[in-house]
Image (cartoon, rainbow, N blue to C red; front, side):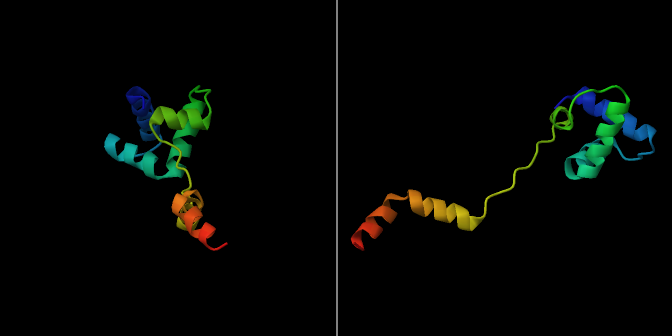
Length: 92
């Protein structure tokens, strides 16, 4: 996260009519992908040439990965578990 970049993004957002505080702005771009996208657009209009992913990183927003399902995790654990091999070998 780059504090100066966040401050610049807040300034640009405020110039376009945003009325919230700096802290509220930070929470907004962390929790609202549309607000982050709008901030990126304003940054690029001001000359920023980085990608959206680079901008997100600059702002301190990490891309969320989709969690694996519990079923998949349990299935994988069962396959990797030595106890699983012990139990299945008893069946033969």
